[in-house]
Image 1 (tube, rainbow, N blue to C red):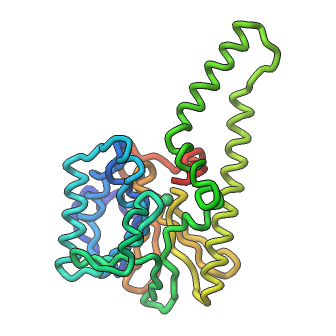
Image 2: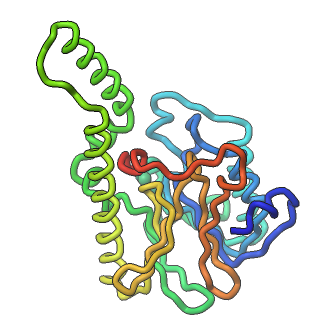
Image 3: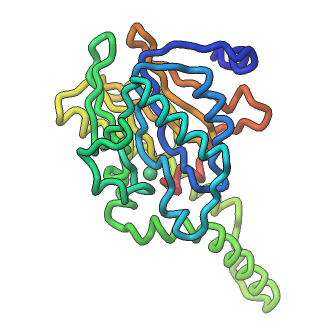
Length: 272
Ligand SMILES: [Mn+2]
């Protein structure tokens, strides 16, 4: 990665395409400042916004909208106005916008999915990916509750173990054991997700997929197809860029910053 130096110098880089997902504007966790730093650094011909850009789920509970989040929207609109091709594929957190798929607003195309051809001829399916997440697909209420309720669950658990101790109930609840089970199921979840997204790309006769949703950035080959995930801008601050040659690169913008964090398995399992 070479972003550590460029983030400081402020020099601009030209790439063919930028792929971003899971920005979650409207939440406190959204790393809008860092994203602005990234957008300042990279100029592109294409900007693909691959879902969960605006978090309407979270905003229905409380709105955390900062001036820098406003600036993110302004910068994106400005780039579209100045001739950059901007394609927005709504995700599950901004699913309200899916009603407008097929339309264009402020020079931004809204679509359900998109096929992008790289400079070296790879045809990639661009899709947010929540429809391949068995939890959000078949048990939407679990995902919504999970979104609100994970912290609550942890709190209830701690109250329960206090209650057990107080009344000397048998059955010790192990946090370590719980975490281990949680990680195992998170990895299984990621594995299943990747397989089914790749399957969709293969069905369409394409060379690979660029998605988001599970907050786990990666470029990897699966069954001879390219699996690319943009990661997120609430924790890991990652983006995918396509260079003029068509080569894809994972940019870990968070790592060059003092408080940058690696993706967390538990959060991936939340599938936001
Ligand atoms: Mn999502």
